[in-house]
Amino acid sequence: MTIKLIPHKPDKIVGLNIDGRIESEDIDRVVKSIENRLKQEEKLRIYAEVNNWSGISLEAFIKDLKFSLQHFKDFEKEAIVSDRQWLKSLAALGNTLFSSIEVKHFTFEDRDKALEWISS
Image (cartoon, rainbow, N blue to C red):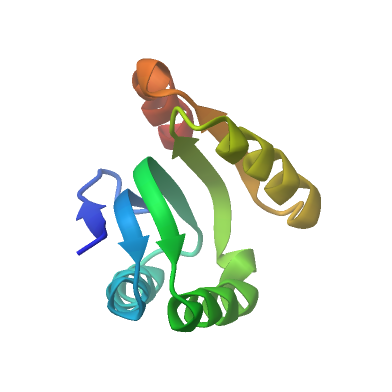
């Protein structure tokens, strides 16, 4: 299991811990959790801690892309917590491509700031 769900309050925050290669089963589990929360919340926020991400299978990528394109308006914020510099650039690109979602990158040192920001 590469993606572990992290419980958060309020329920509009979906917490993820990513460590390893993302497979189709990981996407299925996350999508199920998000769809259940969307029944209760109008908009969701993503808090993702990315440790040692080693890629994504093609099937998982296609599932993730399909879900993201169908639901991008259901999200308002995403906090990415990682010490990987390339994810900081990806967060900036996400802000450009999806202007309805505010994406910020934080280091693990600034994890508390990320939690404060995603909760506000």
